[in-house]
Length: 300
Length: 300
Image (cartoon, rainbow over all chains, first blue to last red; front, side):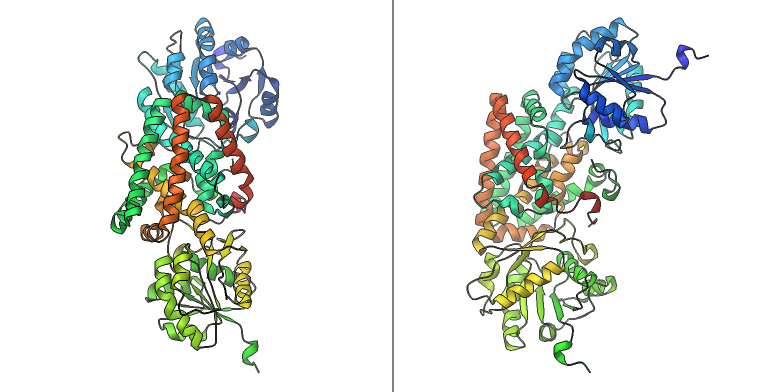
């Protein structure tokens, strides 16, 4: 006879795409005996997720899924997450008090939208992604060795933080904590602006009369890969984390102009020193940026 | 009894590093029965190359190596190639007329330095590389599916062009031809400026108070990888292809400023359209930029 306390925990994904599907797949692949359920506004991606075996079952009834869950993961881009959050938190507070977390790459707008205040909501952001989208591109190894930043606020319950941390550790990630503002400024620089730079570079190449992209090698492959990312998601990120992105874009422009001046002046020693410094900085961070060797890396 | 016409051709590498060592290794791995010899100013890298099996033998005597060769590949960065070229061409012209080619990523300064005029010199550039250096990082699969651009000039012998083309096809590359000026402008945009952009981005991250590089994922891994490249080689490239690089850097700045303005104005539809165009352009060139699937890619 199984009492309710002995039952497997139920983890519910609200929205099922590449990131949430990858986490669901990682949980299924682990030894953790959770039941994985999902809600979404439309059936097709949920059906694909079930066919792929990353979720056990799904429903199109949001309230029903929230009521059944012990841990809720909102798996949606920033704008959709902010829209969904008030309804989820209000319903969660009336029920069995599930832990709620999200995966939005911007935390300020999420924390602003997190009303009514619910102490078991833990804002989170896995720093892992892909230029592909959809649950069919899910990859249960996506979070191996990657950082997941949690940005709890004043009043967030420590037990809820611990539950979300355990979820991510199960998926192979390492968990850190930052303030909301620091997260958004750091991620503007480490993720959002690199995307903007890839877009600017791709736009230049695209309008160049000699079609230089036809003559690209490994450097160009890497420097333009993320320009293939989801345009709607990146539009929303650009709009939502605007100030931090503009500030980091201006900082890149300053470095770009400084480098341009050194080249124009033909200042060889300064160029070599700058390039050498950059190599040192890059190599220092190699283990963080390449957490698993390339030949063991799952193909997304 | 073996007459001289039946003997295996001798391919000589002048300088042995990552790129030349990779080509030598690809030739050794092929069925082509060429003898691979090398010259260099110092013994250690040549000894490593011999120990790795990418060359059969070496000498520190440049004239002797040139005299023995049927096909000479200058395997040095742009500035060193330009310095070495006059001596090599003068000596080649006095001997058995070997075909000579180079692998410099800039062609204007090479063609300018190619005196005395030698009709069997074919300027070349394999669009493949690595952020690593040295023959110990050589990788015989480096050129698989990659483009090699030849920039013959008025008077270059067609038989010499054909010999260099055959060499590269043996290594798995595809060979194209461009004018010297078009090559340098296209490569400024497709390779040199992407490196400058990676340097500018890395410099920004390095001086950011929140240490954002500690919070990087796959996007940052790719967008900063080439900032780990050889500082001396990239100093030389920046100085040697200066005008074309400055022009393409200015074109990137224009796109960066345009994108900044759209974000500042909050123009969602224009951002989505721009990002969507970039995705289309990137996907169109996916087969060129990823000539072999990632999981079959040799680890450099």
